[in-house]
Amino acid sequence: MPTKLTARPPVLLRGWLFFLVAALAVLAGSAAHVVTRPITWSAQAVIAFVPVGERPVSATSLTLMVPRYVAYAASPYVVRQAAVAVGIPPSELQGGLNVTMPATTANVAIAVSGRSPGIASEAANRIAALVVERASGDPVLAARMLAEAPLPTAADGPSEATLLGGAAVGALVVGTLAALGVRWYVRRRYPPVTVPVVPAALRRPGPDTVLATASMPRPEPLEDTVAMSALDDEDTVDFDPATVIVRSITPSSR
Image 1 (cartoon, rainbow, N blue to C red):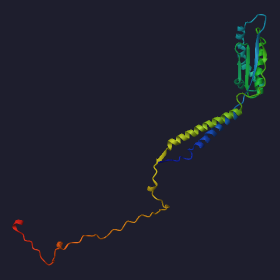
Image 2 (cartoon, helix red, strand yellow):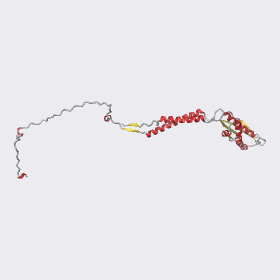
Image 3 (cartoon, rainbow, N blue to C red):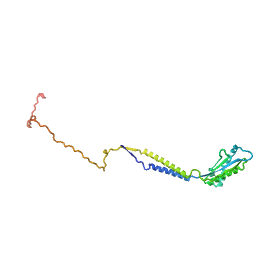
Image 4 (cartoon, helix red, strand yellow):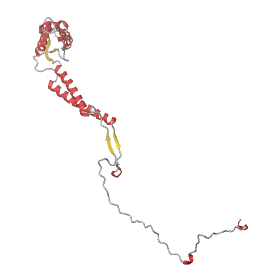
């Protein structure tokens, strides 16, 4: 039966080589990003607003008046004072500040993300104190600190171990895909060639081939004489070599 011979591809076109290169590249890039990424810490302070004075205030009016304090807490004036008190640039504090008013409540949540737990907690509490001080002169609403920003104990987002584990899994997946892609390319670029098998009896002997001999039956010898039957005396004719034989030609024979 025919034999399939496959052309050997170059050394660089190896699946395991592409697997290692792709996996190491992804793992190294991911690890560098995880190690050098900025780590942030978040803290949140909550302020509650209540009506003051003898005149009653409806809940609808209360929810319409509180948003102005949300805008005041996020204003550059307040951010600048809090940044100076904490010792960071105002732009850094502004980028990590998020002031919201939860729905169906008269509360204001002040969340700050900072480069360290102390900065985040101190900045959130400082902004909340400025808002409470501002609301102290309001004849309709009064603000009080409902919950101070505690010192955060864990950084934002997943831990480095979790991120590195995900990077390792991603590196294995990318490396496997790269190896499969190289194998597919090699099979298309270097397809197997079918070579017919020559029978052993028709193969040409090589220089180191030992030829064997086999005894053949010898043929019987041929006879050089042929037996002929004897002639009778009546069938013999005397022949004289000196006699001249003359043949006469008649006119009829012409």
